Image (tube, rainbow, N blue to C red; front, side, top):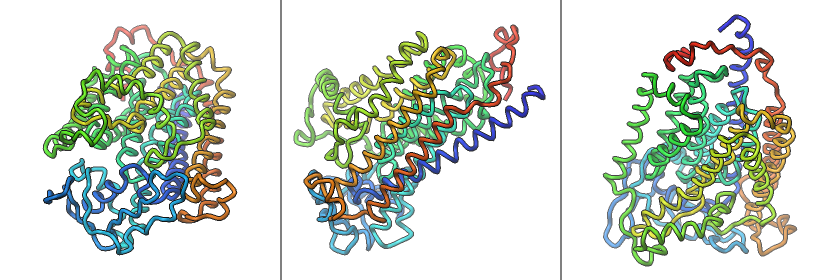
Length: 533
C-alpha cells in the first residue's frame, strides 16, 4: 500500500462503518413496526414457536410426551396461558381482529401441544428471553418479536455493509432494498425462525460474495478486512444452519452458488489459504450440531398421516410436478402474502416490485456480459427447481407442506445477484443508467413497502369487508395506534430509500485514484500471497 492510497482507504473504511449502522437503524425501526402492526399469533405458526420459546427459557428445552397429545407438550407460566380464541381472526380476512382475547388474560391453558417442541433450541434462546422480564403475556410476546427484529436487522445490515462497502456497488442499493422487502421484514418482526433463516441467508449471500472477491489476485478493491468478513460469514452460516432442520443444506447451496459466481481464480485463491480451513471448521461444527440435534430429536418429523397434508405417500416425480405447478403462487407468497396466507395484496401492488426486479434481471442478462447472464439465469432456475426437488424428495413422508416463505432465501438471491453482476466490470457499459434506474427502483420499492404495510394494518384494524374510510373507526388497534405506526413506517421507508439513493450517486474518492497496477508476476505467484491480510 502506498502513502497516497492511505487517505482513500481511510475514507472507505469510515464509510463502511456507516454502511452498517445506518441500514441497521432503518431496518430495526421497520421490522419493529411490523412486530407491532399485527395481532399476536397472526404470523404462521407463531403460537407454536412462542410457546416453545417461553417454555424453553424457563428450562423445558424439549416438550414432554403426554398420553392423548398429538404433539409434544410444553408448560406455560402464569401470565402466558394460551387460549385458542386469541386467533379467532384467522382465515376471515373480511373481519377485524377485535374478537381476539388478550393473551395471558387468565382464561387459557397452562399447557400447549406444539409441533415444534423438539426444534433446534438456538433461535428460541435468542428471542425468548424478553418473556422472562414480565409476567404480562402480550408484553412478553411483543418483546420477543422485537428481539427477533433486532437480531434479523443486524444480519441484514451486515449484508448491506458488505454489499455497499466496495467501490463497485453502483446497483447494489437497489438489489439490497429488494432483499429486505416487506415479507422479509414481516417475518423478522415475528416469533418464527423463518425470519432468522432468511436474514441469515441474506447476510451470508452478501458477505461471502464479498469475501470471495477479496481473494481475487487481480482485485484492487480494498474493502472490509478479510478477518471481519470471515466473522460475518461464520456467524451468518451458523445461524442459518441452526434456524431450521434444513439449514445445513441451505448453507451448502449458498456456498456452492457464491463460489460459482465469483469464478475459479478467486475460488482457487480462497481455498489455497490455510486460514480458510480454520473458519470453515468452525462453520462445520455449527452445521454438525444442527444435524446432530435434528437426528437425535427426530426434528425433521415422522411420517405424516393421510389427512395431515396433500400428496402424502406420493412419488418424487409427482411431488416435483406439483411444486412446479404451484411455483407462481409460491413466488407471490414470497413477495407478500401475510397472515396465515389469508392476507394477499392487491395485484397491482405486486407490479411495483416485479417491475423493479424485472428491470435488474433484464439489464444483467442483456448488458452485463455472458457470465452475468449465466449467473442470473441459474439463480432464477435454482429459485424454481431447488424448492421443487427439496419438497419432492420428502413428499411421501411429509405431504405437500411447502410455502413461499420457505424459498425466500433463494428468491432474494435473484435481485441480489443481478445487481452484483451489474456492479462488476462486465456491467460497466450500463453505468450511465445506474443512478436513474436505481433511484426509480428504490421509489417503487418504497411505495410497495408502505402500501403493503397499510394493507396488513387494514386487514386487522377493520377487515377487508369494510371500505378504507372505516379505518378512522377502528375495531382493533395495534400498540401505539395504526395511524402512528403508518406514519413512522412511511417516514422510515422514505428515509431509507433516500439514503440508499445517495449511495448510488455517491462517488467514492478512491475511485478517482488510478487503479493499482497488477504486476505480471502476480498471476504466476501463489494465490495465497496477494492481499496479504
